[in-house]
Amino acid sequence: MKISFLSAVSVLALTTAIPAITWGQEAHTHGSAVAHLHIGINPTWRPADWNRPEEGPTDSDPTDNNKLWLFSMPPTHQAATPGWPNWEHANGNTFLVLSPVHEDDEIITKPSDPNKTLYTCDFLYSKDGGYGDHDGAEHLDGWSSAFGPQGAWNLAAGDVNETPAWNISLRRERISGNLEPDDFFMLLPDDTPVLEADDNTYILPKAWLADENAWGIHAHTGFYFWLDETDNEISVVLSAHDAGGLYQRSAEVAIRFAKTIVQPVAGDLNNDGIVDIEDMRIVIENWGLSGVYDGANQEEHDRDDHED
Image 1 (cartoon, one colour):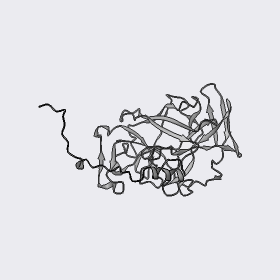
Image 2 (cartoon, helix red, strand yellow):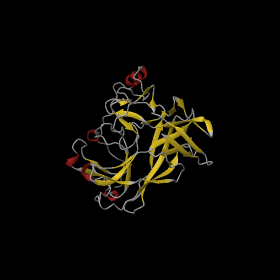
Image 3 (cartoon, helix red, strand yellow):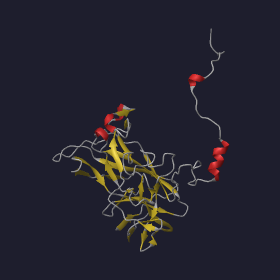
Image 4 (cartoon, helix red, strand yellow):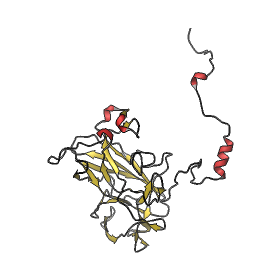
C-alpha cells in the first residue's frame, strides 16, 4: 500500500510502502469482520431492550429524528464497542488502541520530524476475547450508514434507479493539543489522504448496497497519526454534515486513541488493569458500607423554614 501525504506546513510528498500492520509481538490474520463507525439519524432512539429490539423503542427527544449521528458498534454486534455509542470503555477509559506502522519490520518516521513515527488504529477485538482476539472484528476500518432496528437510524434508502438527496460529508473540527496540525490524516483505499487540516471536509460516496436493498455509505478509511514518545493518548473531533439539506448536522464527536490501553477486568477497582492487593485495600476500607438509599424510609422531621 502507498501513502501520499501532503504536509499542511510545506508541500511535501511522502510515498512509502506499508505492509501488513502488526499489533504487539504478533501479526494478525484479519478476517472479514470489521467494525465501522456508523452514520445515521435520530441519536436519542434506543431499543427498549437490545435483546428484543422488535418490542419497541425509547426516544428521549423526538425532535432530533432528522439529526445526523456518529456512533459505534451497538451491543448486538459480535464485537460491540464498550461504552456504546461512544468509542470508549463504559468507565470512560480509551478503547481504540494504536499500532505502529512498519515497513520491512522498520518503523516509518515523519520526513519533517524524525522524532515522530507513524501509527494507525488496526486491532482485533471481540466481546468475549477482548483485545487481540483473532476471532474478533477489526477496529477501526471506515464508515458505514446505519441500518438499525425498525429502520430508526436509516438514511433515506431510495431505490436502485433513484439516488437519495442526502450527501453526507465528514468535517475535521480539531485534534488534541499535543499534536501538530499535520500529525493526523485519514487515508482512502486508493492511498489518497483526506482531513489533513482542521475545517477540511470529505464527502462520503453513496453506493447502492444490494445486501441492504438501499442506498448507503460503505467507505474504508484508515486513521493515521505521526506521534513522538510523549504522545500516549490523542483525540480527533469530527462532525457529519448533509450538503443535500435533508438532515441536520451532527454534534461534534471526539474519538480517542491511545498507544496503551487498560482493558477493564472484573475486580480491578482502581482501573489500573491489575487485580491485586490495592484492589483488596479498597474493599477493606469500604467493608460494611452501603450505598442503598430508600427515600420512603427516611424519618419524618419538622421544617422551621415554612411560612404560616
